[in-house]
Structure formats: structure tokens, C-alpha cells
Image (cartoon, rainbow, N blue to C red; front, side):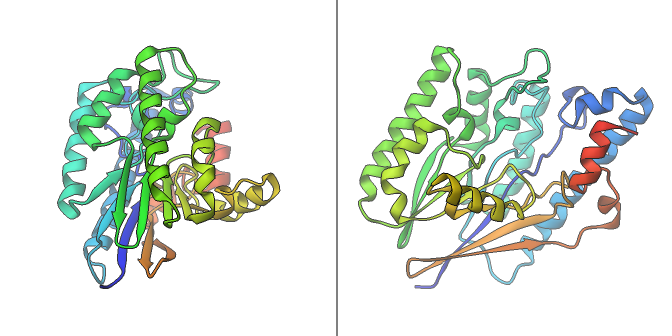
Length: 309
């Protein structure tokens, strides 16, 4: 039997073309004149769509088909930081997922905050994850957490947003508990079998990390998204050594498809054969129109956020 080949994607940030979604730098765009903001938003949406097209086209033309595709979250840009809570975004996401499943039917997701909803110190009013959003996510993307066996290795995918929930909504607390129970059960089944962990966020919440750490010795790799630029792999591995975090020490940052905080157009290839895991990053040539975006490099993006225009 030949090797198992998995294409891993992250942070596509496919964005609803309605600027009211506020899914791309809403505070920065609010500082611009309305017409300027709308033109820039439309340009960003089109550029993100183009980056996705370039990468998917590359996968279709790749030397051999993939056995599985895993998306590590922030598939969409969400809606006003509330995830899947608006019908136009739900319809938009369904259309995009249909296209991805057409390319590879064996498709799994580890959703991120933009998909589920999230909060941060400068959150928009009404932002955050909701039970309604998670139900919509499950209907669109499938299982929020999952476990797969591929020949001689096990794959475990978790939902970072659910794992990190610290609020008091009983439905969301129930979802968190369901994921924790599922993870605990699968870890118990592993015994000494090798496995790979997939998640959106690089930092595992304490509760889920405690469930996983007993099997960390046989974990071959921890693959995550969120940080967009694959150069973060070295940083997180060094941090893992300093903090004695067994998962950060073997972490791999999947390059983002979206041209946000770096030029984008990236994806990761994971090959599994004879208990050995080989990881290789790919970057499709970045079109000039994308390379010139204010969001296409960390420093330019940071400067634009501080001083839009």
C-alpha cells in the first residue's frame, strides 16, 4: 500500500462581498471615506477569491490526487465577529464548501473564530460565539471535532473555539463538554498508536491539553492554522522548548491561503508512510495584484492598521 497524502489548508477567509459583514479590518475601513473603504473592501474580497482560485487550481493540477483534505479554520471571514449568524453568509459558505467537496469528498474542518464567532478587547457590539452559529457550522462543515484512522496512523481534529469557551451559556458549555468527552474517549483508544493533532489555534486550552498530554509521546505532529505565515513554526517550537509544552515543540504552522499578514497562496502537504510523517509547505506564485495589497506583508499590514490610507 502506498503513502497516504493529505492536503492541509488554513485561513482562506472567503469573505461575503457585503461590506456590512465587517469581516475584514472593520475598524481600519471605518477610518476611510465610505467610497474608499468600499473599493478597498471589494478589492480585498476579489484578491482573497483569486488566491483561493490559484491554490485550488494548483491542487487540481497536482501530480497525484490527495487522499484527504483538512481545512484548519477561518474558512470564511464570518459576519461582524459573530460567525455563522447571517443567512447571506450561510448561503455563501454552503456554495464554497460545495466547491471544495467537489475537489475532494474526504474533507474535514477544524473551525476557527471567524467561522464560529469570537471576542477580543476591541470587539464589535454583539460579537462572540453562539449556539446558533455552532449549529449552522455543523450543518455547513460537518463534525466540529473528529477522529480518523488512515492506515497506520490516527488523526484527531478539534474545534479550538469550543475548547477555549469560558462563558456561562449552558448550550456552549454542553458543546465544550461533548468535545472533551469525545477527545478523552479517542485518546483512551489510542493506546500507543501514533497520531497527529489538528486545530486552528496554536495554543491548546488547559482543559483540552490535560486530556491530550498523556498521549503526547506518540503524537507525531501538531498542525495548526491562525498565524498565516509558516515562519511561525520555528517560533512556536522554540516556545515549546522553553515552556515544556509537548505539542508546541512539534507544532507546524500551516500557511494561509488568504493574502493577510503575508502574501498568502499557501498550503501544506502531509505524507504518511510506515509511521513516518513528512510535512512540506507549498506556495503558489502570488499574482502581482495580490502582492501589492496593504495586507500582503506583516509590516505593511501592521502599518496600514495603525495608519489606514
